[in-house]
Image (cartoon, rainbow over all chains, first blue to last red; front, side):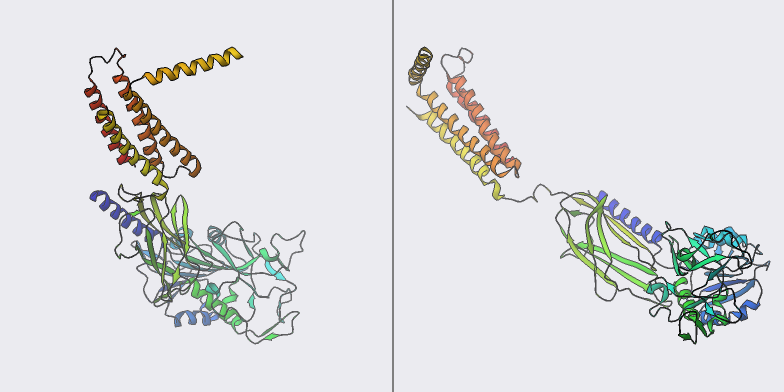
Length: 441
Length: 113
């Protein structure tokens, strides 16, 4: 019995460790407080034309390294260890990368849990198209087609084709866009991509309005365009199952200084904006992509019988138990308690027998108590938390539940009193019968 | 019809006269069996009304009744003077068997309650 108990303890510890490893509860252990980001550009003028964006990243403590895509010394890994924690690809026309970087190594980079920002533009290369495909995003096949919107463009003297769009259809998530959201429309000039609706890992952060379409402005349209309306996504993010985050934008100039400080007036509306919402949008979404917001970890899963504090290796049916877990959110520098009212735990064996919403104490400690159902077997405490913009939490801890022991049943059942009385009367009757049978005359 | 009714009446009166002639001991056994049967039937009615929740309780009560009925019948068979099979068994031996088996039965019943 003791051996079985010890084995169950060890196996539960292994399950916890596996749960932690597979749920990526923490950031990669080699990620420092000043993460290194590699920025790959086509030519170094991008460094100055997008300097506001890079300065905001550097101000938040990231160490940026700028390299040309043709640099022969490019490398993401060295001797099996990754040199960078994030990758920004501001090189829409790059066909080949120098050094040891190629499509496979970039995808491995994302598979290892690290983040990627990819900006495409008119004339994007097949390489970038393939990378985007692997991330669940499909760009328009015609690489010269831009997003055109005749009803939602920003009025400007240089743009006569209405391809400079002022978009304000954002995803409703304060995790991705920050507390305030975007206060002004975001200027966009670039190409369209679409996201398969069955894909629930990719989120359309900024979509085009219903009057937008994707076409080459110099070529006459022969039929309806392949991408149009709100199915066009201008900026999408992917949160992979290992919690790596990928941002894919159809416009490189969305991040540029020019668009950050562009005063414009939207067509058809009388309000004119001194500043576009680009800077705020780019900063907030880069915070999300680099895990400064919306990255959760769940630690210290405890369960015990009400009254005890130690964790038993086995429960009995109809026990009263308490379950507690601590959930924290990464702020970029520290873990702060995560506060939400919709975290639920399941007591699960093939299907959830009990589903309870956890109560939190404001400091990130979530607790609940319930009674084990009248079913015995091997159960799991399953915590599955999937919210838009947050990392997925999938923690499970296994615990067996035994039936009553021989002496744990109810001692005297009121419904059975007739049976008790009949048995005893039978014994008494037998005694009386014996006496009468033997001694009567 | 009248002959049939008359036959039944004759049957009953002959049964009654024979019965009065049986030894007292056997009448005691019959009475014992009858009381046990009543108790068992009451339990069955109770289960039919209330449902079988403590089913092992019902079983122990009912089977104690059945067990003692069977043992009483065995005792009866061994005690009847006309029964040739058990002629060599004395009354004491039969009764001792009866007591032993009853003890075992009640032990089992108490455990199963």
